[in-house]
Length: 465
Image (cartoon, rainbow, N blue to C red; front, top):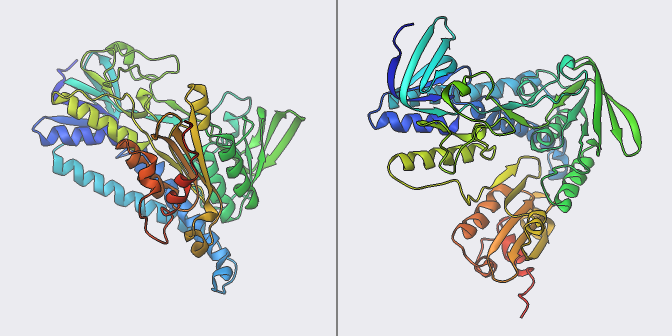
């Protein structure tokens, strides 16, 4: 076997945290290589976050055109050109890939396209996409291998060749009747998008409500506004088996509290969670341990059980958001420079890009109850914010959790127009440990959606004496 090529650092996978770490290390004079099998820049700019939001916005435009008459623009019903929708998305992805390639070149990071596998501690064998192999070794290795869509072990599901989020974003046609297996964020975003493109849509969810990680009032509101658009839901439904082929005719037999039923459609999208890409990459050869779910075991500094090996992002069990992977990069970067940053007590915001969007940061009521934390709850219908009168987008509500014993903001959720932007103001106050009264008494710009925070925080019950 030939001698391995030496590097100061190797990054397996070019996702968010890994690529930023590679670029940073290369700019400081290290010899760095990133090994990527397919998606330059990772899944976010290629097949996940940004492409899905691109397609969702095309669906939003279709919905606006469909309802243009209520705003005074008299036009006919929209005709959906899914090939054009797809091309718009592809054009964006191509531009993002070009941007990444420029960043690789500018930083001096080597991008190696191929399948990487650990064959011993700190040594990778790479089967190059263009043919041949390379052996690479380094003092430090960073695993940034991400996750993939889970295909549950349901009889007939795999052979039905269902869509995942990747294939759903590549369709050049509108499914006649799209079945969505899973009522979480990915499933609901794409369910609404394809409904707006013209598909019949049925969501099949194992839990008793949609958006199951959220409070009951949140899940009920999501189901309500999706129902108004004609999206059907089958809840508390255990999928027993699948028949047929997605893209032709497919049937899902489910068990519900009311008994077994068969849900038929033309296409099937599986959005039932994700699993880590940790199999068959030689982790055991490097002494890298996994947890019971197959994620890489790390400490709060993102160090694995193997000396000189770190894990970044989703494969390390970090919350599955691009912005968290970027924070993982910052933690490792600063610690390599002598810092002491950890993943403990991170305040992680997130947003579901339905319309209206759902945004949350901090505790939910369910989580507060589970942890035995006493809270005061303030709530405000989104329709009470005057900005919604100008937009004609009045669905949803705002809710805040404030500590019962003091005035700390412990959690915030909003369903409504521009929820993700409003969220940032509350998160900033939480990071600064500001009492909720600061936002309650602030002069907020009129007419904006953020103006509703004043009324929301005014609805927080006073502290008991």
